[in-house]
Length: 272
Image 1: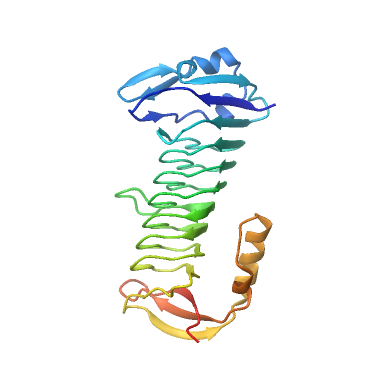
Image 2 (image 1 turned 45 degrees about the vertical axis):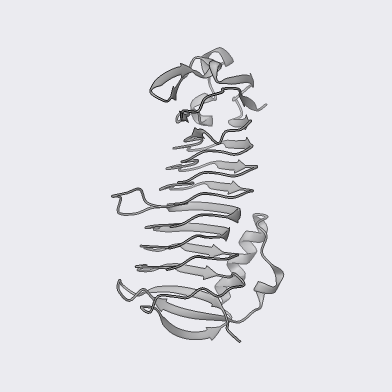
């Protein structure tokens, strides 16, 4: 049985639900869950004043319903289980999570999967800035796991990323900035300065409009890398849409960023 949290609150101040994760709820009854304090602006209110609560969390499955665009930290520090959001979600969804799976049937805000360490996040709509990114002052961002955004995401995706996979339907500026390692695939338009200051890692920028790289990247070769098929098969297994034409199109590979270590690789659709 699934625990259902139907959001009922009418408030313009941020609501932060950090702690409402499957492993923390699975041994609690409905009255106990309803009494859990939730941050609402500078106050704390019991969860029962914000959500209509039904079902059971015993199987570590949670479903959240409603307009949750002002509800932040959904699934933050989650370590196992499943959360499904039926509607838009706010900032920091899945931030610092280490396991489990989160699905959003709508849009998500900034800091999606910020500094996550494991597990999987899927967003059927759009996402904001800093998906999988390091927090300000942190040496590294995402260190494991998978983020899938079917629509476009914002700027600085994967900032300081160390490990893991991010696939998005488009990106803003500076995707992969300060990237240490890992893989980011963009299946749509991307903004300026992709891969700026990246040390290692892989960027695949597969939009129709070929992005302009910084002059500190060097052309390496044109080829059909085997890793592409491996990654695309994994995305197909995860039901993430990959345009069929991209499976075989020639790619141009660039190395950089040579203002850093310069061992990163960027793949662009070949300019034939």
